[in-house]
Image 1 (tube, one colour):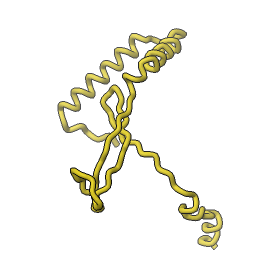
Image 2 (tube, rainbow, N blue to C red; image 1 turned 180 degrees about the vertical axis):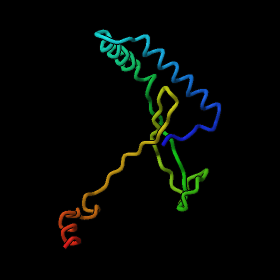
Image 3 (cartoon, helix red, strand yellow; image 1 turned 90 degrees about the vertical axis):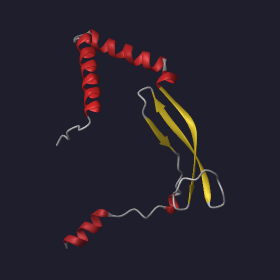
Length: 119
């Protein structure tokens, strides 16, 4: 089910982006040159990778109740994060985490459990 976009500014922006994409696709056409055009776009993006995708360090200080604090203390730890950005303005936080195999729960035997429930 599609949800209606209630904000007219967002709706207008999305309509403009859709028209832009459709005009770009129309300019590409179809046929044998289409694959070459796509590869040219890919090469262009990869040649300018640092302008299209980059990372920055970001520190966050939170207390034990997960409330953001201005300064680190014994009750509020500083967490160093990596923020990933792209040319479209999107951002996300990346944090590599290591989990010891011994701390994971034992793997369940779903077939045996199903047989036990089904009799």
